[in-house]
Amino acid sequence: MVRRREEALPGQRSERRLTSIEGGRGVEQRAPREADRDVDLSAERGAEQSADRSAERSAERSADREVDPSAAPDTGQAGQEERGPVREQARMWHVVLSVAGAATPLPELRTALEKLAHDHSFFLTARYAADHAEVRYWEEARDLHDAAAIALRLWGEHKASAKLPAWEIVGLEVVDRPTYHKRVAEGFGDPPPQLGGVHPY
Image (cartoon, rainbow, N blue to C red):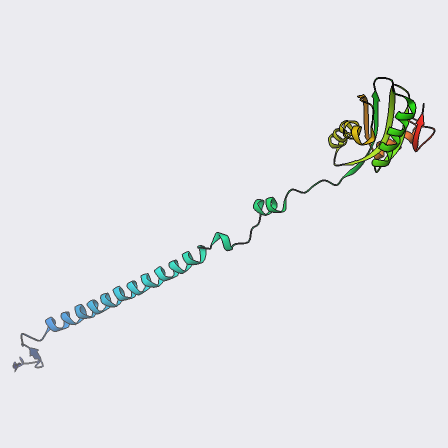
């Protein structure tokens, strides 16, 4: 690098002037560009690292969400189906069953009704004549439909075991316990005079 001092004019100071082709503004301009490239490379590396971290976190969240359904506890509707529907509590129903048919010898009819009373757990009373009879008893069932269905099968199911006559059902009354006691308290549908056992009309 060659430096030359110029003579100062009268009244002026002499100044040094940089005349090298490598000096001056060229060097000063390259330095900022190199710094800018360093900054850009650092920013790119930082962006790549940030993207990698985001991808890792996303993969971890996806893995957490992928749970084996067979290992999960069974709840909701499926659990209810396994446990089964909640059944209603059985209630007591007062039943009056009326049957009629061909005339039957009274001793045979009485023996058959006594056998029926012995077989039925909640039997109350039975009244009979040669060609018809009335049976009163309590039945335990979920609802009126079930109680009536059981009553309609009673005579036929015990026909062979109790040797009942081949009569048909001609009447059926089924009321729940509160209704039965309410009717008795109001004087309607009083119990028969001889409660319990088998008796002729």
